[in-house]
Image (tube, rainbow, N blue to C red; front, side, top):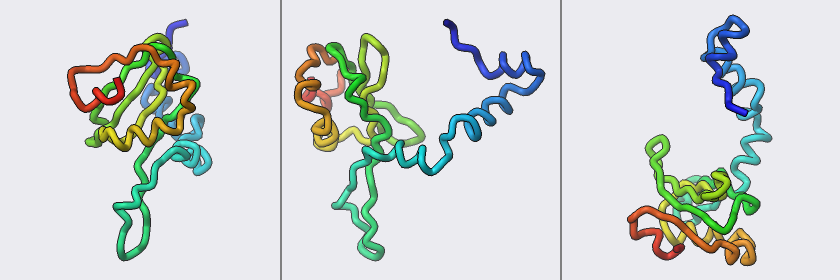
Length: 140
């Protein structure tokens, strides 16, 4: 099945595609609901070393995706700049599904994130494809 764009749906129903997209994003998807946002941030990692001395607030490092079911034998790792922030993406090369999306490119933090994945699943990975960046040699 081929995906259908919002502009095509808009033409069919006689409306603007951008309006259909906004309606989907803000109403139908539930993305802005507090309970959906809580699920999105359930794997975030507290950064104790960056605690605000005046308020005592501990900032967290966003880990929006951490899905052990998306791991497989052939994985790929890459870093991307999303909205001016550095993210690391670990994806299943065969299925194309993202297993880990974390707002960091630091090896020690990524290692602590991957500790949440059971050892049996981590050891089932046979191949890790990466670009020429040396920062990910520790995982390959």
